[in-house]
Image (cartoon, rainbow, N blue to C red; front, side, top):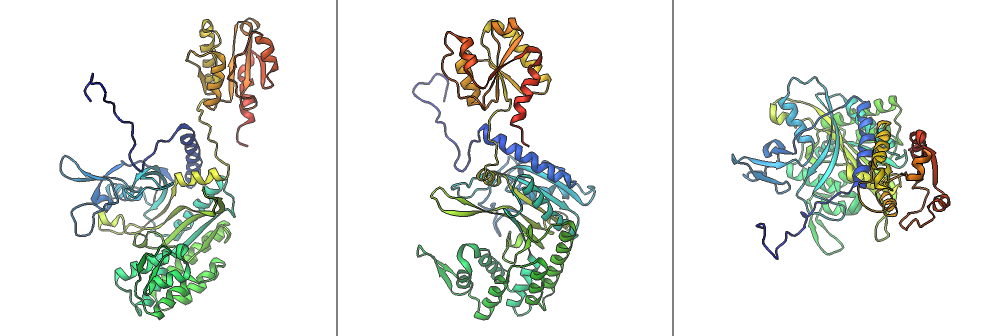
Amino acid sequence: MAKGEKGQRTVARRLKGFRDIAAGEMLARERMVTRIRTVYESYGFVPLETPALEYVDALGKFLPDADRPDGGIFAFRDEEEEWIALRYDLTAPLSRYVAMNRELPLPFRRYQVGPVYRMEKPGPGRFREFYQFDFDSVGTASMLADAESCMVMCDTLEALGIAAGQYAIRVNNRKVLNGVLERLGGGSAPPADVALNVLRCVDKLDRVGLEGVRLLLGPGRRDESGDFTRGVGLAAAQIEVVLSYLSLAAGSRSGVCDELERLVAGSAAGAEGVAELREIDAALTAAGYGDDRVAFDPTVVRGLAYYTGPVFEGVLTFDVRDEDGTVRQFGSVFGGGRYDDLVERFTGQKMPATGASIGVDRLLAALRTLEGVDTAAATAPVLVTRLDPKLTAEYLRLAAELRAAGLNTELYVGKQGIGKQFKYASDTGKTVALIIGEDELKAGQVSAKDLRLGSELAGNIGADRKKWLEDQPAQFTVPRSGVVEAVEAVLARYSPK
């Protein structure tokens, strides 16, 4: 709109599937990310940042036999007519980075946090921009790295206040799944499209149940709405192989391995997958991570063809209540596995890798249900009020002194009266408000208000200011020379134990 045009205004609107995030949630997310980072670094992972934009071929998101990118990504052509896209995860950029930096010491162990973008249908709690926090070990085929991934997942969730028993790390191996598929093909893998469809049916077990999977593997299934999903068309004997796999009784990790070994007998791929699970079990047991924290679960299917070996999923097992009152479990917040083929796309050489990723926004929502998230919006918990504009120099000195002592402090810079300043302090999540007037200045004192103890103050102080101050139960007076210690004492009451 040209300057000076009348009757036309830009409409304030936001892209569908995106959201604005206010201070309280942003700060809560940063506090959570800091705790996660501490765990990652305790294992020796180092930070990496890659661009939000990548060439589409680096992301591997071209449709088969097409010259346009997959519709699931945000893509456009640059000035050189190259296809560019917003990253849809943090793993593909990592693979590109490793391929471009062949001198990296191996294994290369990195973590990265940042937004990713997917052009998917938005819905409740489902956005097109969301944060992930990954850790990966590139350049090692050792199952110790996969076992360590499980340990990191446990330690991370527990560091965030999610106790053992409130989560489960579930582990499977894609090679075991391949062994089951080989049994369907009479000793050789079935056609790729059939194998993919079988895995998709397995992945729907939680939603449709064992009988639903049976129908999907066979003739097809009609859901409650009347919609019919065409089945894979397996023979009855083949369906029983898959269902026997999905029906393996939960038990110890070693017990699950014994059952899997029996089920995939005769398959080299299946036997290799079971052997890898046994290695992971031995490492976890030696490190003190029992079956109550990490379990082997044959029903875990992640990424279908994306993963090449062990796969991991971190699920929260405590109950939450939906907006309609329905009780359910929160579900998956952590996932990953071994992907040995991604770097090879660039170099032509094998480069084994494994790791996992947190859905940051989803995990933060889960923590909120546990009432373990501080959503205070204040970056500075202390407010120096301006009772008398003529004393502004004193207020500036007081704020500077508090900041020099390491206490984040905001000086009120508006023009509102003291009552409105207290309301501002409350609305912005402050913990302490400091007041100096002529009386306090002459007495060498500062009045302090513990806002978490006091009620929200929005009214007029009135004529008898001294009596008003005395009547406030959270109001107290300290010597000007002791204000730093007094503020520290108040803030210490609310510091995490």
